[in-house]
Length: 325
Image (cartoon, rainbow, N blue to C red; front, side, top):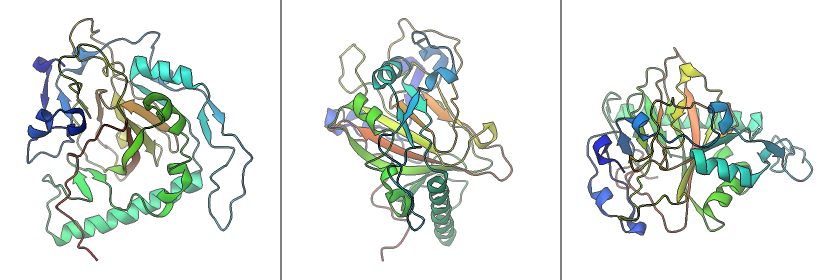
């Protein structure tokens, strides 16, 4: 990792990998994620083979197997045949190896997306009420068990994101991205957590960063397969005004300065409601600012990892926002 071009904003807990140093370098008082901040991402670019632009990050899909089941009592069937999965897992794995990020149109049912969106806004209203009761300034960083501020106007919410419509199988055991995740991380992988990042009007653009570093095995001068993957699912159609996420494809391999390609622009793949984006924990990326007047961007995420990896620094465990009932 090119130490001359980056700095640690907050350490990553990699105790399972034996890396205690990152966790000890956490910086208090900052609202950035537990991430490696990259000051010059263009200097960390490696041009992946046959990669052209953002549209090349999307892979072909096929309808899920099995007949469609009718909805009952307003519920969304988990085996709908209009939900889609990646058609060629080997190709998706090869593209992911080159770019560190892929996307596909999962076509999650609009009625399910709408229910989840309403649920998120209800939870966010409760959070706003509790923050107001505590006289918590929204202009200052805050970190609670249920929600952390990730720069101005950007909130990482885990409170009740495993309840209500998020209990549906399409977010869990029948999630359309699971075959890709298992292909990349192995059948023994596990989901670490889920949440929603809410990007409000007037939010700041994040610094370029990685969610995790390369120093899992110090002294090993080679690129390793992915150990942790994030999945993004927009709950609204995200255009430039709402603050889409930008990625630097190939930077998941760029932990050394040799052979890196400069001057290549970041990619901003389409982020439509019900589609999904998977990216390597080591990939350089950032969320952009929300410049809309009144549009709010809720982005569901799930983090998956190999059985031996854990990241336990992003959220505190001893500072509840809500009183226990």
